[in-house]
Structures are given as structure tokens and as C-alpha cells.
Image (tube, rainbow, N blue to C red; front, side, top):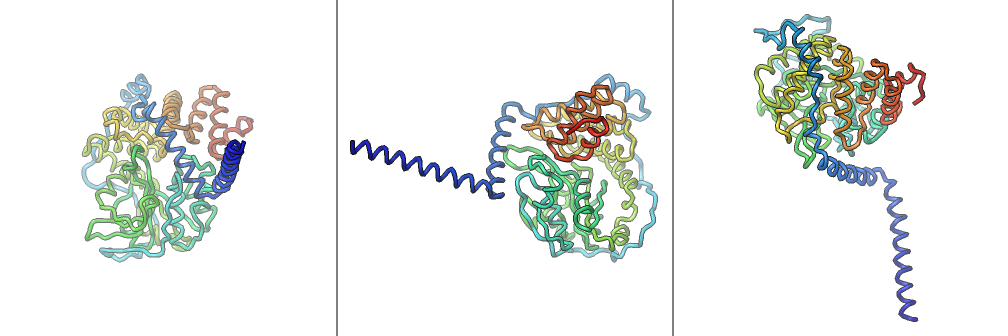
Length: 426
């Protein structure tokens, strides 16, 4: 009996300790950092299992071959024409630059508060760092509450970052495509740190993905930029050629934050690139040149960039044809190098196919993109599939997709507007 009592006492003690541990675990989970670490590890493990069973790099989207053939037959120039000499671009009215010519060989802008990103929080963290230079004292958590209320949202778009700056901080921001290393240096020399969107590789099983960097310095004599990297750490040095190669993955997109009183100064530095139409023209020409000069995966990105540039210029048929070429090259890329997350970050193909009347391609592309994800949390893909279904008369399917878009991103504006237009509730 005495032995039995000791065993029961021991078991009761263990149960008590387990209860205490459970309570402590629940309390610890309420701490944001702990919760983020737990969720990150769980989601990462689940993604590894899902992707091991269904490799997303093996998923290939194929535009409707009949439509593609018809589009190519209708185009007078199925491939872009190489234009000899510099691109002719119109001038715009802006104050003359205040930056001396030539700019300094080396510039480092102080005053940026580095911030390591939380789980899946590259965009908010980088934006928070960029805002800190101008005296904003918030953090990535404040940004994320607005731009990605669902912490599993896969990406924050540049337009979402600009909206946050202008609606929440009292500062202004602009984004352009078609940037160059010289322009980045001019902006930094003028006192404007620059956020760039670029490709990123090297995280274990993850493969290619998108990433933001805040550039706050450069050293032209060493051929490098100084970056505040929310993943790798502060004051990272990145070689010019490496930055350019991975920046190409996002059509040389850049974002600048600035106070209203310095707008004319910024426009002067940008020169003709201050005009978004000119920037689109420059980007289109650059992608055309890259198509002829590059091979393999880089040529895929060049065709994709051409589509994105033409989309911004509202040449939707030309953009769709360029995207068709990019998608035709995709299967030729080595599986472990394929940028299978591309539609997580860039939605240009949806615009191009939709406004070209290619609704089935929109639906198939969105379905392919969502189906290759470990969890389909991508409000833009649901929204565009809903738009295409609505255009084809499938109102029930459209409403389901619009609801999914606002479910995954609460109060997602386009999805809410579409539901309101159809008299449906979220």
C-alpha cells in the first residue's frame, strides 16, 4: 500500500507539473515574439511536408495555346525590336537637381534604425526602417497591422506600402520601374534612402522568393551598395552586379519616401523618370534589350519585365504576348531555379490577360498559383479569378472568390468593392 501511495503521489505530482507547464506555455504563447517563433516553425514544417509531396517547382502554367497562336499571328512584331542608340524620352517640368555633378564617390546616410523582420514580415520591416530615417518612431508591427492584417499574407505590394506612408505617417512616397544603379546613387547622394524589390535565394529548402532592401549608402570605388536588410542584418554590403542581377527579377522597381517639402528636389533628381509613363517606357526598352542579351532564367525575367512594363503603359495585348513568351520559357529553367512564387509578388499577368479578354487564362493562372501554395493565402489571385468568373457570367463563383480575398486580407479594398457592386456580403 505504501508503495502504491508513493506511485500515485508521483503521478499526481507529474500531472500537477504538466498542468503548470501547460499554463506557462499558454502564457508564453501570448508574447508576440514567442507566438511568432512557434507559428513560423509550424508553418515552415507544414510547408516542407506539403512541398515535398507536391513540389511547387514542378507546377507549370500554360496559356491557352489556341489564343496564344491567334495573338502571335495578329502581332506585326512577335518579338520586340531592338532600338539602336539611346531611348528617346520626353521631358517633364521639375525643379533642377540640387545634387552636384559628379556625385560623391562614397555616401552613407546615417539615421536609419535597423529592424530584423518578424515571420514573413520583410515588407513592413523594410518600410519601418525607411520611415525611421525621416523621424517616424513606429515599428514593423504598426505597419503590418495595416498592410497585412493576416500575418500569413504572403506579400506586401509596393502600392500598399505607399498607401501606408501617405495615409498613416504624414510623409509621401512614390514608386517607379526601370531604375538604374546610377539613379540609385544619385538618390542616395541627394539624401533619399531607396527601397528596392529584388529576388532572393539561399534559405534552406525555400528556393527563390521576393525580398525588399533599404539602400542607404554606396561606395562607387568598391562597386557596392550598403543595405539595411531585415533578414541578413544591418549594413550589408552588396556588389553592384549582384544587386543589378537580382533587382532585374522585379523590373528594377524602387520606392522612395520623402517629406512633402522636398518633393521638387526629389523630382529634380529623378528627371524624366519622375513621370511614371516615361519610367514604363524606359523599363520596356531595357527589358527588350535584355531579351536579346540574356539567356536562361534571366531571359525569362526579361520577357516578364517587358510584359509588366507594357501593362503599366496599358498595352494589354502586347503585355499578354510578352507574358506568354515568359511562361513558354519557364519549363526550360532548371526545376530548383524556377521562380515559382512569381505571382505572389507581381500581378501584371492578371491585368494583361483580363483586359485582353482572356478570362480563362486569368482563371487558370490564379488556380495554378493558389494550388501550388502550402496554404492559399493570396488575396490578389482570388480577386482576379473572381473578376474573370464574373466576366464569364459565373456570379456564384465570383462571389466565392471575392469573399476569399477579403477573408484572407480583411477589408481588402478591391474585394470589398466587388462584393458591394454585386450586392453580396463579405
